[in-house]
Length: 354
Image (cartoon, rainbow, N blue to C red; front, side, top):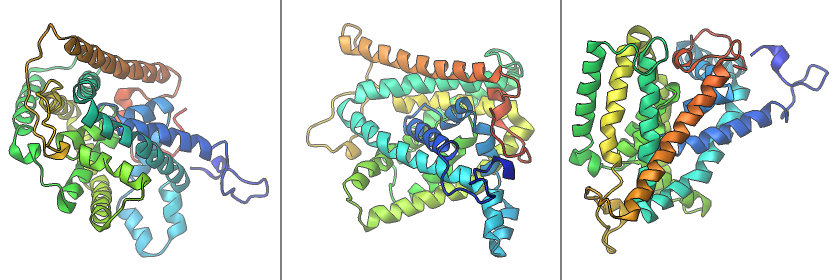
C-alpha cells in the first residue's frame, strides 16, 4: 500500500484509527465472517463483490520466505508493511466478530431444524458448484471449456467424494486437537477460491458443528483447557494451511487451472451426499454430536418436503444473485472478473480493487 493511501493527521503521522478506511474494512470483515460461517456461501465471493478480493489474496500470499526472513531479522515494521498489516488487522477483527455472531445461530439451527437447515446448505452448495463449473470455461460460460478429459475428472472426483463422505472416519471423525489442526489447514484453502466455502469443507470433514459451538461457549465465558487447546490447534492449522496448502493449490490453478477446477467441481458435487436434508428423527436420548442421521427418500405428500425444496431453491438463488452482483461489478473498468480473481498475481500492487 502506498504511503498516500494511509490515513494521517495532516502532519505526516499515521492515525491510530480512521473511520473512513478502517471502519470500512471492519464492516467488510463482518460481512465476510458472517458468510464464512454458512456452508455454501464463500467468503472469497463476498470479498470479490466488496472489491477487496485481489488485495486480500495478494496480502495473504505474502506468507512466504521473504516474510520469515524479515521476522528472523526482527524487522517487524517492514513485516507489517509487507503484509498490508493495517488492512488485514481491521478486516480480520471484523471477520472474527461476524463469525462469532452467526456461528451460534447456525449451530442451533442444525440441532433444532435439521431438515430445513441442511436444505438451505444444499441449495447454497449447489449454487457454488455452478459458479466453480463456470470457471472451467475460458469464456465464463457454464458449458464452455468442458473437454472430455475435464468431464472425466469431474465424474471421477464426484464418485470419489461421494464414497469418501460415507466413510466411518468422516461420519464419526476423531474430533480432537490433531484432527482440528488438519481441518483448519484444509478449510483455509477456500479463501483463495471464490465459490468454495470453508464452512462447507468443515461440514464435510464432520467438524463444523463442533467448531461452530465454540461461539456460544465464548459468549458465555465457558472456556476450559481442552477447548483452548483445540482452538490453538485449529488456529495453527489455519496458519499452516495458508502458508503451505494454499500455495500448492495456487500452483495447481496456475499450471493446470481448468483441470483443477473441474476436479474441484466434481468433489463438491459428490460431497453433497453429506448434506442430504431428509433423514429419520433423532432419538430424544441421543446427543446431536453422537447422532448418525439415516438418509431417507422424502414423501412427496408431506408439506415439509416441499418447504425444504423451496428453502434449497432459495439458497441456490441467493448464491447466483451474489454472483450476479459480482459480475456486474466486474463490468466496471479495472475490476476483476470471478475467473480473473481466482489467481491474482502475487506481485500485483496492494491496492483496492475498486
